[in-house]
Image 1 (cartoon, rainbow, N blue to C red):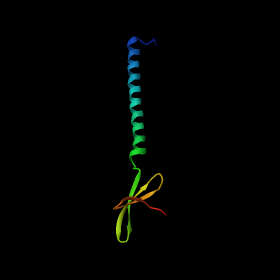
Image 2: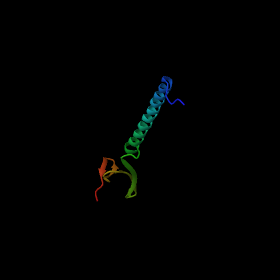
Image 3: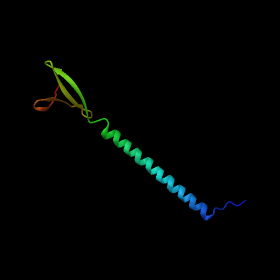
Image 4: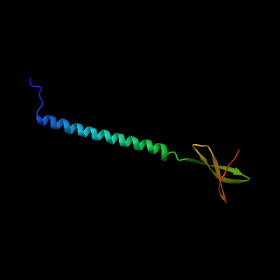
Amino acid sequence: MNNSFTGKDLDLFYKMGCYLMKERYYFIYALVLLVFFSLFIHPTLYKYTEIEINDQTLPVKINRLTNNAKVLTSGGWLDITK
């Protein structure tokens, strides 16, 4: 029984290793892109909702990180204070 590998076998093992390494890098790149997408793109920084003041419905944006809220008026975005 001969357990030695020929040069052809070693070349095949090398090619398979390179292929598997390349596939591993594709998986790592996809995983990194998924993490960046989930952190920075979805969900967005602001959550949008509405409030009613004096029979008017005004848009409100709430910062998801700081919970600061701003209401949109004709003069622009104004901070809502408690």
